[in-house]
Length: 176
Image (cartoon, one colour):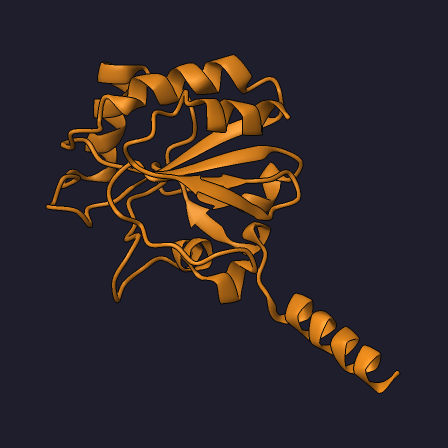
C-alpha cells in the first residue's frame, strides 16, 4: 500500500509541475500576443521555418496541408528562426511579405525566435525536453522540423526537416 501511495504522489507531482503546451504565450508575426490555449481541441503542427534554406519550398506543401485540413480541427503554426547558418536573417515584416508573396501562406506565422542554444524559446525548450513535455527528448536538427501536438496539448511526435509535410505519417496523425 505504501508503494502505491508513493507512486500516486510521484505521478501527481509530475503532472502538477509539468507545463502544458497551452500554458505558453508567444507573439505572432505582427507582434500581437498569441495565447496557445486558443488552439485547444486542435491538432497542431509546430514548424521552425527559414526563408533561405534548401527546405524553404516546404512552405508550399505546408500551405497545401493547412488548406486541406484546417476545417478538420488542424492548424499549423510556424516560427521563423535564424539558428541554422543564418538562413532567416529577415525581420518579421520581411518574413511575412516573403511568405505571402512567394507561397501564399495563410496559416499562422509567429514572430522570429530561437529554437536551440542558450537563448532557446521556452516553447521549444518544452518541445525538446522530456522532463517538461513528459514524452520525449529531441534536438531541432535544422529548419522545417515538425512537432505534432495532439488535441489535448500533449506532444505526439516530431518529423525531421527532410520529411515532407504531406508525408503519410503526418496525414495519418491528422486524420486519425
